[in-house]
Length: 441
Image (cartoon, rainbow, N blue to C red):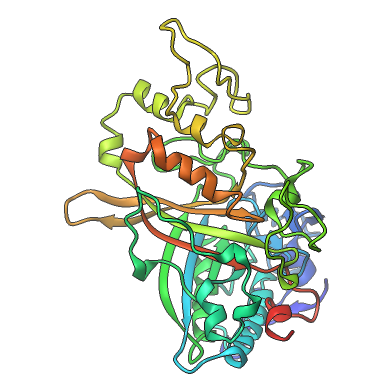
């Protein structure tokens, strides 16, 4: 923990703020082992005092401690990759790559080695090889980098026999208006951070690493509320103003790992039907469904508050069910109102997507909002970069989306414009790179 963070070779030699020890970089950060996340003790955005003459180092000519948001570090190595159970981050980049013509398994392995080394360094707040200096004076800022493989990756690397059944193409849905140029891909990278420059720094470094081996197929940029923007931690809101993420599976749930992560062996049941097409290299991994969902905000905002709440089935102010209580109160799907109808309408989004309405199907939703400007027709090109995680998309995303596709009251106000499904292997052990168990087995 005392290893210094050194400046890149092209940085000025007299920049005092670059020679920050790992202990100083993390400030008062402590471990929260369940997620491998290190969090500043204050949990806010306050700077350490520069007048204490003690621990901050300011009194003896040292550099001031980073804000707690900047000092937060997520571990690269672990059972699972970072960016799955990590709390929502303020800035995100989703990028798909296709292998370059002529590139195969050997080139893919070399690329994942480079990517893993870069991600490990940047997530620790250290410069990467050939660092551009974009984030020199920032800390890790909760940076996470997550890698996944698309279906076509296995064809192009001669690994078709190792492709999991869970990567079978998603079914077509009637609400889809998918752009194939912004869908799928051989490789997928998710970048998240609580600082926009730190996130861009990682994006730039990984794009440079890919030169000659892979080229960008598509890129999407997203955001969430900034850390510390509210008086207490709250479920995020989407661009419709709705609380979005209520009833997400929790890590404290007894069946959380079974629903979200691939088991360590085929003998570990994932449900009544057991594991489908178990691949050992995916143990501890998860499957990411990525959807670019355009929100038709002009149409949505014409609805009255009452109608918006009936479309969702929850109060807009606090996310509580229309049947009463708080955000975490279970939906009372059988409650009848004075008009003789169910209080939560039969086609309300929250009713149709509820796990109890879908045979217990559940997925961990971890989205970003996006706004890509104003379209030619004057409408905002904005919405949700929907990312969900599950041990098996056939038992997570697919049954829920099929049901939503048949009668969700929200459907007239959204458009699914891009889609991808990616196998995200388990985390790399010390000395390993992500995907090594697939590429070198």
